[in-house]
Length: 134
Image (cartoon, rainbow, N blue to C red; front, side):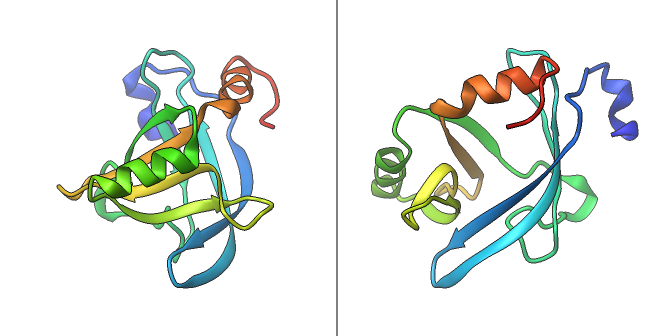
């Protein structure tokens, strides 16, 4: 994060997260990532130190990985985007084995987009304001 200091952003305390990730035609796999967000909005920058083979595998020269937004119904939003020719690439595996919390889809133009269940927004915003990451 030191290299991002010139941006003048305040950062949430970095947190290690272990996430079970689903991907089409692959068994769910657990990955650990180190993550932080810029604290001040309205837009936020997410920094992820990912692991090889994960959806957050490091990209050459640290290029932008994805754009993200909140959705009120994750699974319905996945279906809607797939109907618009987005391709589901990965998701956090929920208790029922299906997508939960977030999903990544590839847009027809090639951009990776992340949709995030708005139900987790209060916990995320609390972390950005100094509380523990839940």
